[in-house]
Length: 123
Image 1: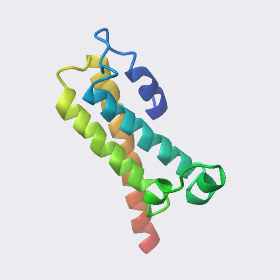
Image 2: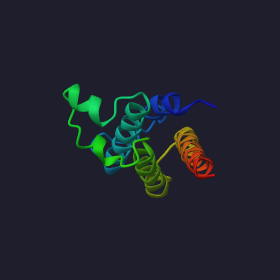
Image 3: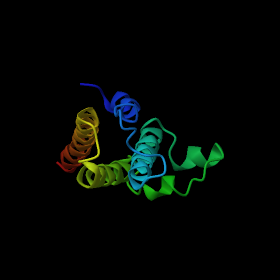
């Protein structure tokens, strides 16, 4: 199966019905998912609060991640993906459903790994 980035890139092109409509609610949900995943990637790659400010970024949204490891963005992406799954399941192609499932599974795996890391740190 593809990773998060590959699945995300394929999603918009995986429907002959051109779903989601660029002016629709579901496209807004998808855009937020992509924004949260991008912000997570920035944190992981070291472009967190300090470097965003020095790069001219807003810094404020990066500050939303209180733990500094991108977990907040993953949780928000997970919530939006679950929202998309439940509200648009009947509109998505089978391939889009599969891709959303892959992305959601990868996000959940990352969150679980973070939780396990936290537990191991406490031991």
